[in-house]
Image 1 (cartoon, rainbow, N blue to C red):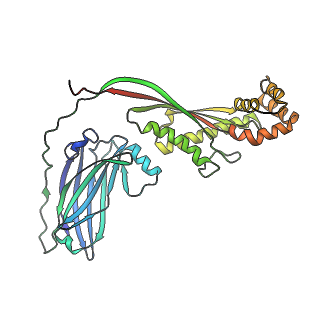
Image 2 (image 1 turned 45 degrees about the horizontal axis):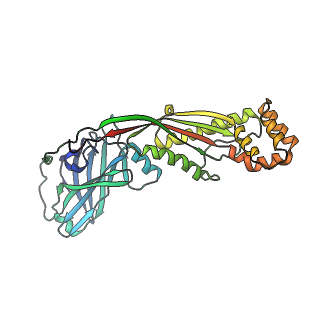
Image 3 (image 1 turned 120 degrees about the vertical axis):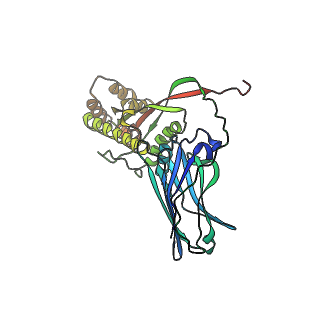
Length: 360
């Protein structure tokens, strides 16, 4: 077995010179080991990313690579990701070894990989390739850094610890900070018809058309989260139920189902509960009125008078059901499912910048 304690400081502003400002800080690599195990080779090391600074939608991909003349073999990759990019990969069930960059603690990622032994590996060199990602797209690929030279052609004494200094950076002209031009408040809204089993409020993605309806909410939120110049201020959720049954029961159902949608968003994106406000609209009588107004029934005017009357919601529903049973049956089958919905509004702050004129 060959074991070398090798300390390398990888300054992102040096190695990732074309991505200034994307990644800041350093990655420290300690305790690099190579071990020959009969017909296999084991490579291990510790990746200390405690000093690495990442925007939430960026990530660094580290790929140990063995090379020799005429041969190259990439070993298992390790991805260190900002919060949003990490959540995106979890939600899409991405494969591979990826870790969320956690701040406030010392974060060390242990790395170990076993590959089949090949004769050309006797005098190979272990490199570390790196690139930077934004969302799910690689925007920068950079060179490689030598970690370890393997030599299994003849026995060698245990080497002393070696310290390899970081490469000397070329002079880099840092861009001037962008000047804030304007900050404005905006919002985006939508409606999702998330279905629930009778008298339940747990979200089931495979129930009815929930996959598409929940996709509406995700698409709206991600259109905001994907922009680094946008900050979400508040998400307002308002849930509604249809009028059949007692008002108090429907109000409880609407409230619990809307809270379930809030928890779904919190679990998916890591948004805090204080940023998501929940309101219960109870029974959606406005939606029922619009349905009746568009209808063809000769009793339309009488039904609208009941809806607009000062009667309680339970009295209105019972009166329509008893006096106009055929119209009520049509409302129950055609309209009531559309009255069970969640309206959402995302309020956010967008900041635009004044770019420096190159002629100045």
